[in-house]
Amino acid sequence: MSAPDVSAPPLPKAPEGHPRRWLILGVICLAQLTVLLDNTVLNVAIPSLTHRLHAATSDIQWMINAYSLVQSGLLLTAGSAADRYGRKKMLIAGLAVFGLGSLAAGLSTTTAQLIGARAGMGIGGALLLTTTLAVAMQIFAPAEQPKAIGIWAAVNSLGFAAGPLIGGFVLDHFWWGAIFLINLPVAALGLVAVAALVPESKATRAVGATGEPARPDLLGALLSTIGMTALVFAVISGPHHGWTSARVLGSAAVAVAVLALFAYWESRVEDPMLDLAFFRDRRFTGAVAGAVLITFGMGGALFLLTQHLQLVLGYGPLEAGARTAPLALTVVLLNFSGLSAKWAAKLGTPVAIALGMALMAGGLVSIAELASSGYAGTLLGLVLIGAGCALANPAMAHAIMSAIPPEKAGVGAGINGTLAEFGNGLGVAVLGAVLSSFLANGRTLSAGLSAGQLVGSVSVLAGGLVAAALLKRAQRDAG
Image 1 (cartoon, rainbow, N blue to C red):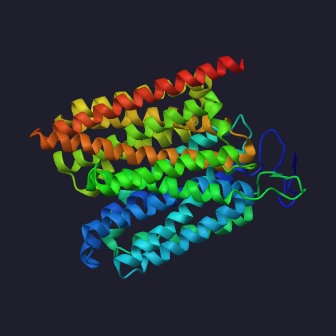
Image 2 (image 1 turned 90 degrees about the horizontal axis):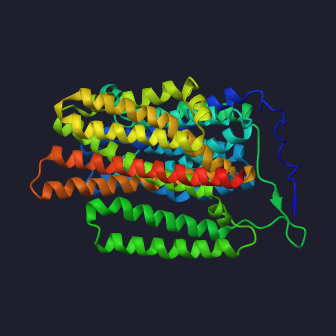
Image 3 (image 1 turned 180 degrees about the horizontal axis):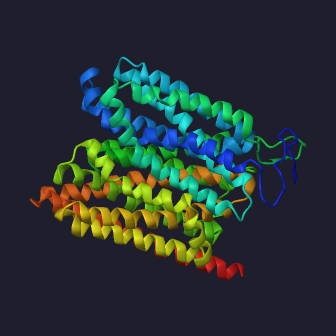
């Protein structure tokens, strides 16, 4: 039995959704963009950091990984907290923590300070990434949700492409700390806009036998955080320390043991953070399986592409970043115009995902086969990948979110974000290992990069077919 939480103002029940929904979407996408930029913006500052802070290679790795490691480990917990305590509250908290972390990062004078600041930014990032998608699901009516999620997904792609460009521009004109301090006005603007515009929403609270609200699943939150952090740490450590090293095998063993305990606990507790019954829904499992495979293939293949542009075609970091921009621009054009949402509605979710993945796989093949002859083959591949992303990614995210009850929207967003982080990290690690094995066997860099792209294309295509088949079966069962 459950009782409504009267402390949160109810969202409008009008069929068109919240009256200021598009303005609110702009606000949360701005917050989302700031977080996503910091996933890639630091890469172009590595030479400056090495010189100014006298950073060792291990320091640089931790500067980059502290952010993603903390963020990915906390996504499920952050989503659950947003559902329980209020998504608006968590958005405000996320912006505040992210802004303070950015300030600390920009003013850091030692590598330890910068690593700690980046970890703090990861906490804020986890709160923002989960609540932005959850809020979008709450303020839009079902008919408009695909277009809203498409815009949200386009911002993700824009963040990926714009990070190196913005970082390169800032470093050309200012000192390295400015790449973090530029977050401050955005965070301040976001705080004011969220406080003024975003409606509060939270899950109804389950009531126990005593009539009191059910207790938060603190043990589940702790286990999920430890387990996911250990898992991501093992994945990102593999390429540098070896897959059979004590560090990687130990982290992987901790991850498996703790996540197994987490699953056992969630199946027993009265009010679980993550209801394992979700995994019995074919819509959910289909979208989850596809999301892991698509991010695996895309994350690794795009990592190899940046290496190809710089090491084979001879572009600098800023030039290489600019030449990957057509991918993001294609996604932005198709999603902001609403074309991808219209195509997805006409085709249906399973076909849209399968077609989108096929386009992406074709783009990766184009890069693998034609990139060595110049940029034209790469450009064709990037446009195909962008068109596929615009079609498949929003459909996949919507499939995950629509398979979960609205009161668990934060957890759904946490699952979506966790899959993206895990798949991306695994793709970089595995396809990077493919490249390394080619080089170790005396093959050329170009051959290794092409082989990695082809492995990525197979993974993406497999993800599309698996997701489409499971989602089609779920539709048949429901009909």
